[in-house]
Amino acid sequence: MTAGHILRGPALLFCPGDRPDRFAKAVAAADTVILDLEDAVGPDRKSAARDAVVDALPGLDPAAVLVRINAPGTPWYDDDVRALAAHPEVAVMVPMAARAADVEALAPHPVVALCETARGVLAAPEIAAAAGCAGLMWGSEDLVADLGGRAGRSPGGGYRPAVEQARTRILYAARAAGVPPIDTVLVDIDDLETLRSDSADAVAAGFAAKACIHPAQVAVVREAFRPTAAEVAHARAMLDAAEEHAGGVFRLGGRMVDAPLLAHAREVLRQAAP
Image: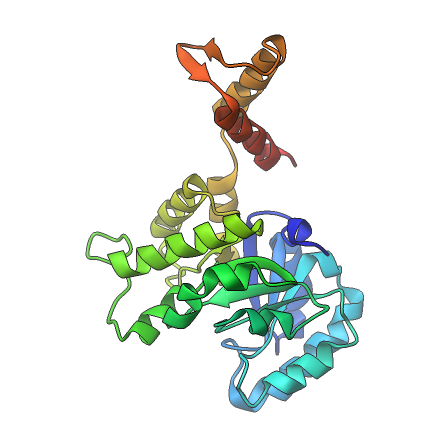
C-alpha cells in the first residue's frame, strides 16, 4: 500500500478495537475503517482489543483498514507493534506523532501520522516527509489539551486562530510531502450541521478526507466531499475545451482558464469518480 492508495474515499470511521462484532459493519459503512487500540479502549481492555484486531485482520481487506496503535512511550506501544509485525501490509496510525522517527520506527507499515500536540504540529513537515509516511492527520481535542486551552472553537462555531493555524499547517505539510491530509473528527455526534460545515471547509481548503467517530457522520462527510453535478459538468467542459486549445491559456464562460484551473478540474473529476 502506497501513500497514494491509503484512502479509498473521503470518510474514515473509527471503530473500537475491542468490538469485533462491529468490524464488518464499519468496513461496509465507511471508505476506510480505523480499528482503534488507543482512545476508544480502556487500559483494562488493551490486550483483548489487540487480540481481537489481530485475529480479524486476515479476514479484512488491508486496503479498507488502518490500525491505530497506542502512542510511543505508552505501556502498550511495543506490544501493539509486535502484534502487527505479521501484517506488514496493514497501515498503522500512530497517535501523538512528534518526530519523523515515530513514523520510521514502524517500517515496513505504511503510516498515517496523527499530529495532536504542539510539538507534533511544529514538526509536521518533517513527519510528513519521513520514509513510510502515507498520510497526515491532525487531532483537535488532544491539541487543545496540550496547548492548555479551554475550547478549540469560538462562540460562532469556527476554530479559534491557534487551532486553525495547526489545521492549516497539517494541510501544507501533507501536500508539500505528497501525502493525503486528513481532517480531524467532530466529537459532537448529533451536530451534523457543524460536521457539514467543517467537511465543506475541509474539501474547499484541500483536505483529502475527514475522520468520523460514528456511522451517522459518514454520509455527511461523503456528501460534502462529492462534487455537485454542476461542478462535474463545468470541469468536463473545461478539460474538453483545453484539448481544442492545445494546452494553452484560453477563455471559457468569461473566465481565463490556465494550468491551475485545469488541475482543479481534473481533481473534481477524480473526486466524482465512483
